[in-house]
Image (cartoon, rainbow, N blue to C red; front, side):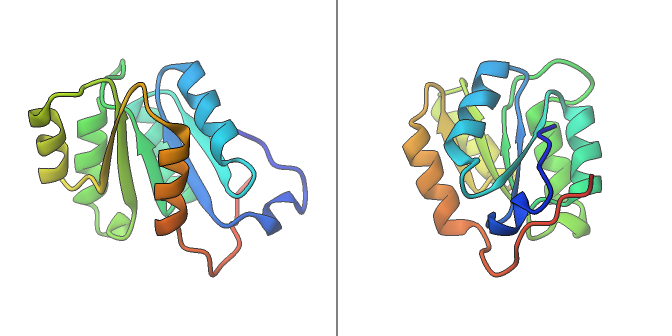
Length: 141
C-alpha cells in the first residue's frame, strides 16, 4: 500500500485501488495517477477485498490473471454484487485481449477494459472523466 504524508491527500481528487500481481504494472499506474489521486495497491484478490472493505475506493483498476484464491473476474463479481460497492467503477487492465474476454468482463459489470500493453495516457483520461472530484480523498492510515 502507498503511504501518504500528512496533508498530502487534501489536494488529491480521490482514491484508486490498483490490483495487479505485477509490480511493474502497479508502479506504472502509480506514476500515471499519483499526481491527482491517492493510489492504493493490492497484489491479489484476497488483499484486494480487504483493501476495498477498508478504504472503499470509488474506482478500481483490476487485472484478471492473478495468483491466489480469487482471480480478477471473481473480484469483479464480488464488487458488482455487493450493495456497498454499487457505485464503484471497475476498469479491467489485462493481457487477455480476445473479444470474448472483454465481453465477459463487460457482462459481469466492468466499466472499461484496457489491454496490456496499454497506454497510460488512455487510462488517465478514462479515470479523469469518471472519477468523482467533489470530495478530497480520505485515506485511513
